[in-house]
Image (tube, rainbow, N blue to C red; front, side, top):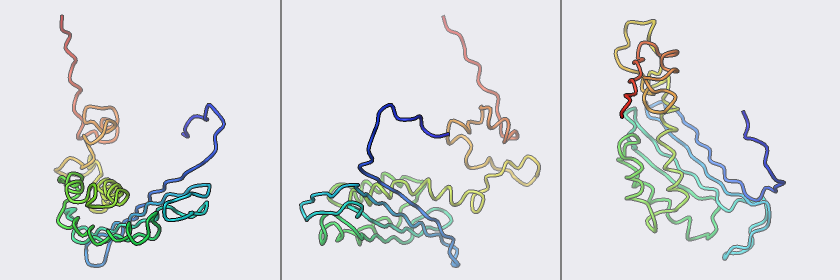
Length: 193
């Protein structure tokens, strides 16, 4: 279902695109390759010069390599287009500071501590923030068992995704329908005087 039609005429001025690709490697590790770009529909006057319409203001890449426990074991950042060439693009090596963080255990706070403000690039740091959920999507059904298991006797653990969003509350209708083995009855709302 698309968004509702705009209530007024409008003109596209700026596009930010984020793309993340996940790769299973032959050595058992996974690479998450992330890219962020900012493109304007008009010429932009930057302190470093004019950026032509359609040419990216930002085109930044971040790759993290993770193990099956979601630990970052390698990291690399490169900048192909930046507003301040020779300056913005010098921060790439600092993104090795992501090594040692775990995507599911304080990752976003760790990124902020290590790479926020003048310690990093605003855009690369923002890009890093979306990697945990991308990794979970990549691992779903491949590394993380997301099946109900109602028809098999071998599943003893609740599927990872349950109780992680409003739709998959174990006391909700979706879990009752698609994951009946793990459904719980909703708590009765008590009436107070």
